[in-house]
Amino acid sequence: MKFLDQAKIYIRSGNGGGGSVSFRREKFIPQGGPDGGDGGRGGDVWIEAVEGLNTLIDYRYQQHFRAQTGHHGQGRQMHGGKGDDVVLKVPVGTQVLDEDKETVVVDMDHPGKRVRLLAGGNGGWGNTRFKGPVNQAPTHANPGQEGEERWIWLRLKLIADVGLAGLPNAGKSTFLSAVSAARPKVADYPFTTLTPNLGVVDLSSTERFVIADIPGLIEGASEGAGLGTRFLGHVERTGCLIHLIDATQDDVAEAWRIIRGELEAYGEGLGEKPEILALNKIDALTPELRDEKAEALAAVAGRRPLLVSGVSGEGVTEVLRAAWAEVRRQRGELDVDALDAEDETVVETPGGWSP
Image (cartoon, rainbow, N blue to C red; front, side, top):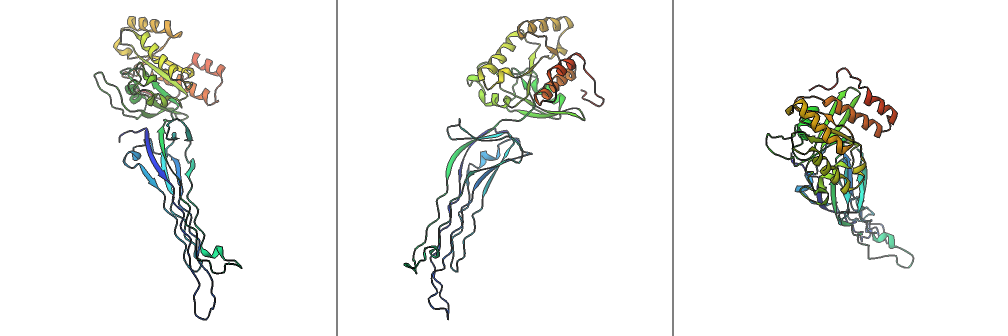
């Protein structure tokens, strides 16, 4: 299935049904009088966050959504029924933006959240409503109220606990496929993923979190280069980042500077997010070259990176546990002192992750 994380759609609520002009004319009932019923209310437009969806692909093939017009009133004071509503089902994490693509109307940030975007028009009054001592036989009724309409943008920001950041070919997709059941497309030639991928990491029965591969980060991404800010937005909801650096490239320090510069230039607090720094693809290096690359990276980052290989599985558990500790701290389940203690002593959990 293709991935789509933004879509522009047109929505319109239903018009109200018209009131009825009717008079009661039955045998043996003289001077029956008006008996026109009211029109029904037009249908509303709702949006609902549901589990099981992870893309807005449905809104590529249908961009116009109109709720039903309310049913018209009838004689014998029969009121019209309400028009059918339209419910837009979207993935959790979807934002609704105004047509300017900047004003956030609502953020569908948890499952089951349901918000009415447009209200249907009220139904018109039948001629019974206008009966009075002066006008005992009114011959007019109100039409239904017009519904509302607007264009909106739907923008999906994936909800994941941990995000994988790094330049193209840093090994993010391979790492994701190694630690979860996700199977992103990977290649043995220079290749960059074009869509985010989600995976669930099971360290143990009580240690589970969602990890996302955030693609398309290159120099100038914060200004729209490449896939630009489109995928940087997916990083906003993560609790921490695993920053993967390709150990086989010549200048690992420059690779770190590029990604850090783009995160800080984008704003939205990305530069302040906790970062797990990892030197990836170490299976392709000699022990001496590993130390040399790690020292070069530590000189600019201010801390020594973790050594990891998504292919061989070396160091993967340490990276995942460091990320899990940050996730727990972000949730308020772990204080800073406990986090430092866990950094010093890694407790192996039986039945945990293995390559």
